[in-house]
Image (cartoon, rainbow, N blue to C red; front, side, top):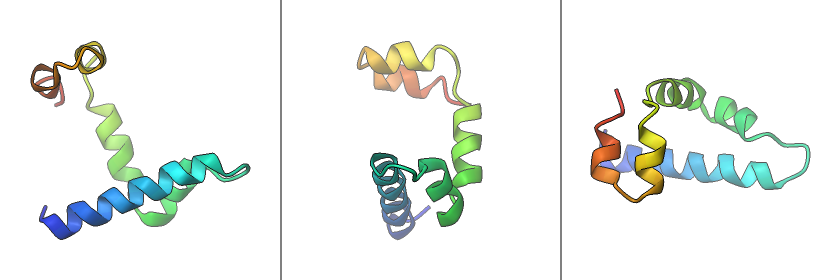
Length: 68
């Protein structure tokens, strides 16, 4: 993935987050409309149970190893 693609993925994620603020609009719907829904589901599916505690403790290097 190049820098341009990463930037647009970031913007789509921001749009998804902003949609959650607006009553009646779903972030999941925005993910579907912008085309990142399959990637979102795949990403969530591949997170190991040890990822979240490590990430919350700020141990991002170790947490990253728990993503399949």
